Image 1 (cartoon, rainbow, N blue to C red):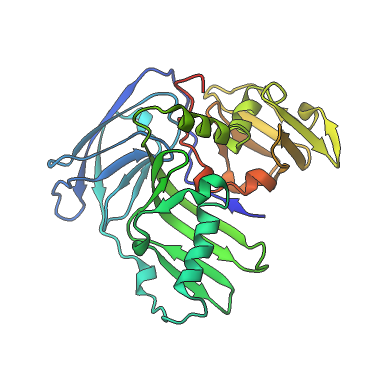
Image 2: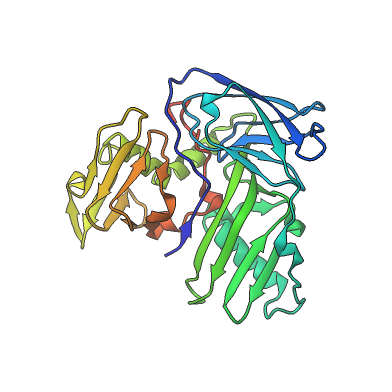
Length: 331
């Protein structure tokens, strides 16, 4: 089963009024301010950068539940999850050494760069219409290594990959943490990757066709499913669940608690379920743990232990929307 991981930390849900976090980013050794440092909430459209004094200010609401990422070329990234308890922060960045760059890579590792790039794009961007519409702007920055003895393809980059999604009109800045394809079965390799992402909306004119494309992508996605599950509106949102070929009452197999003081709900899955959404192909959901957490915004955790297969499991970066998608509109 293919699995996609992303950096995600559950935080307290607060009232949706705007909050502001201010801060200063400095070099850990010299204590000098760092200019043009990227500051963004992972997998959202909300971000900013530091000025020539290393200062930044960023606003967010209760709709933002993801980690704050501090990223600058040549330095180790910093992840902050408790920003709601702070008004102002000082961030010290440490210079990084990319150990992967120290590996001696043979020019002939058993697979041409052209083929490695093809396999990478298929599993990173996806094979859907959205995935095929994507272009990696700085493809030359991507480094690929094939290990013939282990049958694995590893990818990394010292700079964020800039991906232009022409079908959804987003430019995504994706910082790879890990990426590996295991070719145990050439026709169906196992894929696992993690990273942080920042979405820039390129649809400045708000053209209807891109809004339709985004809505079509959202409906039937894992994000849509988790939001519908949270609100116990699976059937109302168009989902049918089944077990061994028979339609079932989803809430006989999915036990959902009331929201706790932080707004999270706990879900227990009785057994593997098939998921059908309108005309979409079949998906499945299964877990490796007794319970997992979900929130109103479509987040779920721990991500590695909640596994989607089939149609939902095949969704890749090209099919992804920012976590704040649809939260300020009626979709």
